[in-house]
Length: 163
Image (cartoon, rainbow, N blue to C red; front, side, top):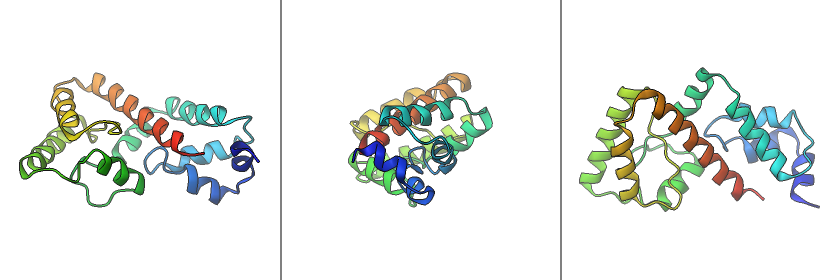
């Protein structure tokens, strides 16, 4: 049985357990996808998730952005976020790096109203810090669009792990 056949046959609880955190702590996107079954292939399912995200209202985008954890300092991470941040060595910050992440997280949230979001896979903590330092200087519109782009990148990476 192919993956898509398996996913099409899942009940709602099973489907949400697999796809409910593709967009951080945002089960309603997976729920809408579940209600649109069956899918012909994985690409169609993944495209539907992205389409739902893209076509939602700004308030929902902000909710999704705000469901993401602060980098390097958040203690309660979803399993996905913990793996992603650990692979980028964000759990191995020096005191100075930790303090800088903490200050950047606070300043960023004050300025933009949502946490700094970056797809950390394949990046190290220095690349992430440099990106953080640069992006905090953006204006709100540019950064809101960049944050949404990063959320989609994270979702795509998480989807690519699901087989």
